[in-house]
Image 1: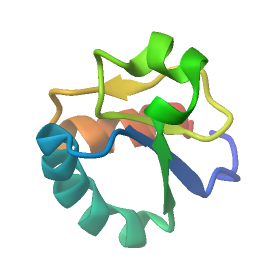
Image 2: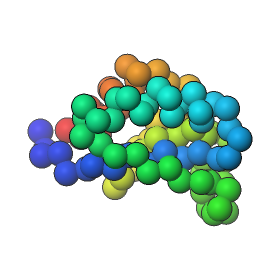
Image 3: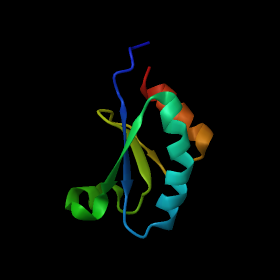
Image 4: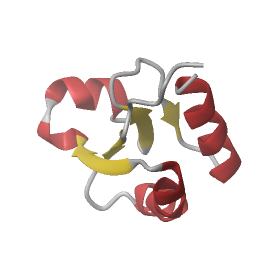
Length: 87
């Protein structure tokens, strides 16, 4: 198992996205125990991000990792994703 060096979770979102609000409420309380910080990324500000995530938001991705986790997901899905990506 590799030493955890990732400390940031990117949260791809867009203003007015009610699903993003639900996902943020689900993910936020799980971050502190895992010693992770959340960085919200507005996809509408970047055409490349709109192409990648526009119809998939909300999406979370550990900074520096290729795999992401798109909606719908629950707390267990998020924990599994973090565990698998940090090994």
